[in-house]
Every structure is written in structure tokens, then in C-alpha cells.
Length: 346
Ligand code: DOR
Ligand code: ZN
Image (cartoon, rainbow, N blue to C red; front, top):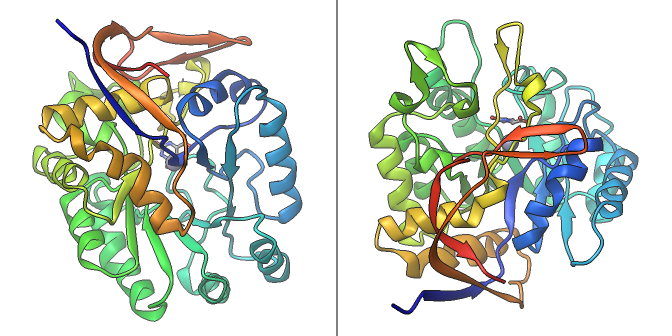
């Protein structure tokens, strides 16, 4: 039987974690394997809160790949006490693609994140004026809010206000995880939403074993109900222009994934990212919409040109290795040890 092969415009990953040091060395080849551009998130141990830190980080990334063209895009990490002059200059000089809002303590390395949204209103004005993008980790963290409801509360209590107050600002609700969030993205102007593979493959039933969460299926926002998964698949596979590819691939060395009972959120998808999306789109009989999601909607939202290269993906089975292991680092691959039915062939 002839293999089915599709050809699409080269994708970009609008949300990924490349990390730094040895992990960066280990994971970068996966992102640059298929993507032309990647948004590399700024929640490093020392978060990217200035132009000079961003420039240093871009150099570190570029030093670690050799052959292919690849462009890392860095968002500024917003804080309560940020330097607005440096921020404005960094946006003007295209050092930053936009700015990332982490509510304080909402995820990894977010202890320097924003405590009250009013504190960053001056920064949002600058972003709006410069027509750059606000990227949001949209979860409200409060001891009285259930972990599964954090996205909804963030939308109701915070995002709705920002949307109204800064009506020309382009905003991305990152890693949309619920029907509530996806409908909000679809129904509002100048809103984008990235969707990860895991939020279209897992529900909360898949991640608990005897009431204990599987650390390798644990991410923030946490995966939710079947109704949410179905809704995310519907928007992604319809080609709706507000939704685009963002893996949130978030590698952690297995040594650090579960430290003294504290599990770090993050799922490592970049070794098979486009293949996982292809699997999902094929299951939904929508493989013809993959390119819109992976390679067209994102650049259009970010006002960037479409990539000119093409890549081919073949429908053929292969097994993904269980782990990525190099440079003294060992990371569990999402879907590791399992069969995939699509493979990027060039
Ligand atoms: O699961 C996650 N991991 N969600 C995030 O928002 C951050 C990320 C990380 O940095 O590991
Ligand atoms: Zn992330």
C-alpha cells in the first residue's frame, strides 16, 4: 500500500520551554527539527525581566544550534516592579515579541510573577501602544479555588477586565484547557489561544492512578473533562483563526520532577510534537486543517510572515523512545514507548 504523505508550510511553536544550560542543549534539536520560530518562555530560574537578559538568552540558544535556521522569540516576564523604560525600548527594538503574564505562584518559576493586575497596567499600555502581544498564563490561584476551576476564575475575575480596558491589545490565552476558556477566545476580538497536544489527548481520568497523580501527565493548567477536550479539538480542527499551535513542551529532568512529594508541572512533547497534532487531526478527519492550525493562524495573529519552507509528514507507524537522555539529563517523553501513526520525514 502506498504511504499517505502530506506537505504543509513549515510550522512554528508559539509556546515552548527551551530552558537553559544542559537541558537546553538536550532539547533544542527537537524544537528546531520542525519549527522555524519558537516562542521560548521566559520563566527561567532567573526570569527574563530585562533586555540584557533577553539578549544573553538569545545568544545562549543560538550558540546551541548549528545547521538549521531557527528563530527564538522571547517575551518579557512581567513583574510588579519592572523597569518600564527598558521594557519599552526592548519592544521598540524587537528584542521582545511581547510580554508574558504569570500570576504569582501559578506555575514553575512564577514566584516573581504579578500579584495584582493593576501593577502592570502601565506595561499593558506600552504593549498596546507598540502593538505587541500579551501572553497570559490564565489561572487564578487562591486556596479557595479548586485547581480545575482556576482558568474560569481567571477569565471572570481578571481577563474580562483586561480585555475591556485594553481593547486594541492582542492577547493570547496560553494553553487553553477548558471549554469555558476556548469559547472566550473564540468569541472575543483580538484574542488568540494556543492549544497543546496533551489538552487534546488527556482528561483528568487519565492522569490519576489510585488517587495519585502521574507526574508525567501533570501540567499547568491541569487537563480537565472530556467535554473540554472535545471542545478544544473542535476549535483546533475547524481551523478557527483564533487558535494555533503552542506545545507548552516543558522538560524536567526526572531527578527533579518529583522532589519530596512536590511534583513540578510540565509535559515534554517536543520529540513528537507535530506527529501528535497530526494524530489528533487525523482522528477528527481534519488532517486538511492541520496546516491552518500549525503554520498559518499563528503568524497571522502575530503579524509575522508565513514561513516559505514546506515539510512533509507521512502516515506510517513508529515508536517514540521512552526517554530523552543526553548531557547527564534524562527526560520522560510524553507518549514515550507508544506507537504513533504519523512521522515528519523532512
Ligand atoms: O506545566 C507547565 N509547565 N505549565 C507551565 O505553565 C509552566 C511549565 C514549566 O515551566 O515547566
Ligand atoms: Zn508554558
